[in-house]
Length: 140
Image 1 (tube, rainbow, N blue to C red):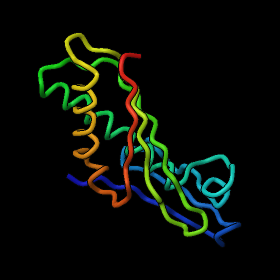
Image 2 (cartoon, one colour):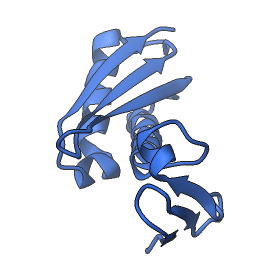
Image 3 (cartoon, rainbow, N blue to C red):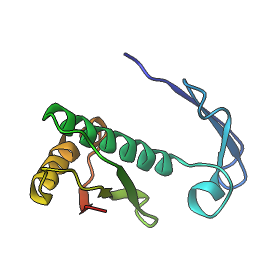
Image 4 (tube, rainbow, N blue to C red):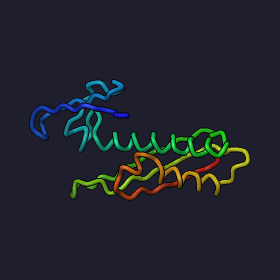
């Protein structure tokens, strides 16, 4: 299986503009620029897309891990916070903040172990070479 995306850029770093399109066209010529990446502009940026991909992948991995154990997942919500060092221009890490509704018969400790396994096994986690930290709020 292959997944594709396309980026187009025109102009200088600070004054140029770009567009990103994904294979699914969920992003279809979505704008990005210096302002959307390093300031507050309208559009997206690569770091935001990495955080979104990680949040989506990890949350699905938690649901899959629960299902594989015969447990019906409840509501799962993950915020992924990507730490971008603006001096070194590198991603320092990603923090996953998972909030999950309580599941009958599943202890908080059991749920946290499942979440840890999902964090390590999620496809996006495995693709990244930065530290990944996590907080779990269970029973919300």
